[in-house]
Image: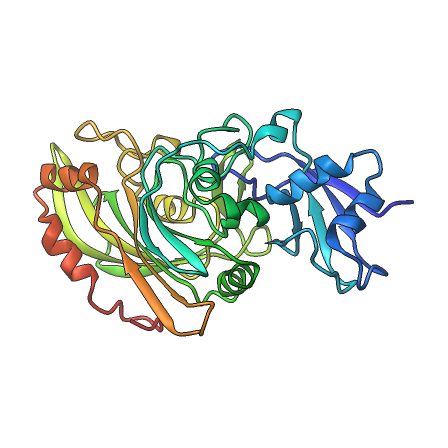
Length: 341
């Protein structure tokens, strides 16, 4: 009997999409075998061409890591396969989606994603994604799973995102995400007057009442998650107090900042999914990934980049009486946690 168990996926390819059924494969006894050949041998009913596409889409994962098809197994992996519909067969079509390049070298790309752009193809969004744009502007990325995309931002979150250009870089960046050494900071406008600084340490899992939402749960029922935050400025829009908050992630769970701030009574402005108020006509969650820090895959040297708040968030701050430029200067100061500056 094949060691396969079907269950809902906890982390879909598109964090804004509901989870799909998945298949689990135990790689015991497959030491030295290539990932693609192992999966093909366990799922003979799926053509090798389709399996290669699934691997390229990141729908085949080893211990929550996306790996190239030629990866040699150690025989101890838990491999998760997320079957994709026929529509996914054309997901790797290069399309002229604009990309905003902040930095590029032989190993990686750092991009600034606009709000409204889906990062990775998934149900309901098989075209017009950041990945389609990467394949158009950098065709060589077709050789890597997900065209080198190693982490995600929600559709309506703006800001910095790193893309690997080589297998070496992809392995390095994935390892930094796994050991939590990649530093990511966000600017968010939250409802109410938040405590000046603090942290939320609460596990996250799918909301049992709605499969498109996440929720904080008791330890052991979800994935561990911690968010540090500090208030940069307070403001007011109409009758509502708001707080411009900087957040630092220790983990990178789906919707983490949105869920954690909601859990302490401060949902993000514009975040309809989590009960955030619609203020000043702002039509998305007020969240921007403003700083990215990592060790460069080429030589392990520290590297960092910043991206200022986009115009819509600056206008939202102005509507709240917050000096966005002064707040961003304040965000550049040390966070007073154990993260290197």
